[in-house]
Amino acid sequence: MMRKVGAMLSVLFLMSSSMVRPATAADDAEYRAKVAALGGYAGYLDPRALPNSIALLPPPPAPGSAEEARDVAIAAADRKLAATPRWDLARRDAELRGDPSVKSFGCAAAIEITEKGTPNTYRLLRRSLLDFGLGTYAAKQRYRRPRPFMSNGSALCTPNEEQALRADGSYPSGHSAIGFGWGLVLAGLVPGRVDALMRRGIDFGDSRAVCNVHWASDVEQGRVVAAAVFARLQAEPAFRSDFEAARAELVTAPAAADCADPVRASQD
Image 1 (tube, rainbow, N blue to C red):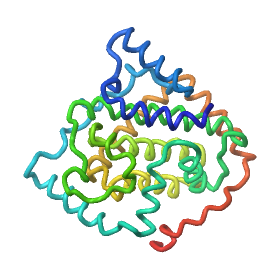
Image 2: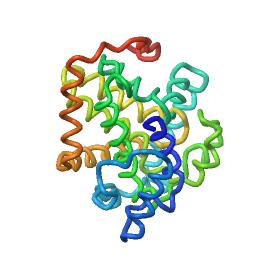
Image 3: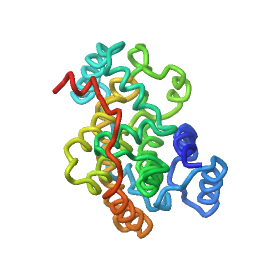
């Protein structure tokens, strides 16, 4: 069942009309019915308790502004990474279904994180994934910013998702919020690996710009949302309970294996 959580989130992300924080009991029931129908776990937070990304973030860069010019320049530089190992990493980071994303963060933690071997940590990541991702959607709905590939006409690293992404706002990045949020969660559990974990969270978000599906400012503001959601999660009893259970099980968890990262190695 937990393998279906990533698929659930991907579907929910693309149902843009249902991603605003529910305003009524009927909306809330519809949200929970969708989660149940997809066979996944809901997040820790009631959707109405999520930080309001509209209030939290500035509007996306205005047309013709220096900020927009910076986004365009970064996107042009990132397009040069197509068909490189960094492009391949961006494609892998785009996949929220299954376990590859969890494994990459386990490698950064130097711990093998799996559904069977570390169920508490795995559940913590899979449930918080929904909170971090949904935290971006109020602003996504408000601004509906077009994505880079829609502007520059260049390829994206996940062409099978192009049609769905065209219908989904670019600002801020949900993937970036998830990556940075997972970095924060795991850094609290494995403080000795804080640098590697936060670097993995940053790279996970940067992959969206490399993939040509998000502007740099989308990625950066996704991290702001992640920080706000992480702060709010501290007041949630279920999150705190799972966090402590994860901390206890990681003491005896095995070391991560098969973690060579040629992209990072070539940069160090």
